[in-house]
Length: 147
Image (cartoon, rainbow, N blue to C red; front, side):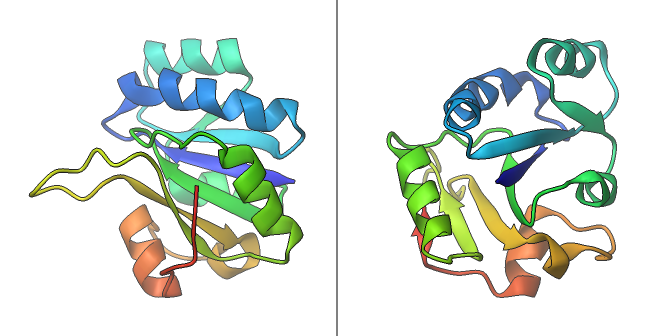
């Protein structure tokens, strides 16, 4: 089972599209829980009420509350590719634990495409002020790429 943490600080309006995609993972039993890291707002509260996700203002809080051994930490603007449930499920079933999750390419010349990380919870518990960029760098996560 996978715990998902979505970093939506500054991007809460982009949450519904990613959450809609994550529904397929929940239906298939891959996604166990979803935490949204965002500034408190009526929008985030409404989204959490509608989806069953939990909100928290910090990445540390989200990591502390997760129950899964493996975390997918995703930016709110990530859009998953078709077949992501099967690809990620197969990767995890094969023993994979650390990877970069690449979504649809929407970067551009001066902006990287959104990327998330797949990481063991034990590797990130206790990190001070983790964010996606620091997680990838600190954990040395590079390919294999999933998604």
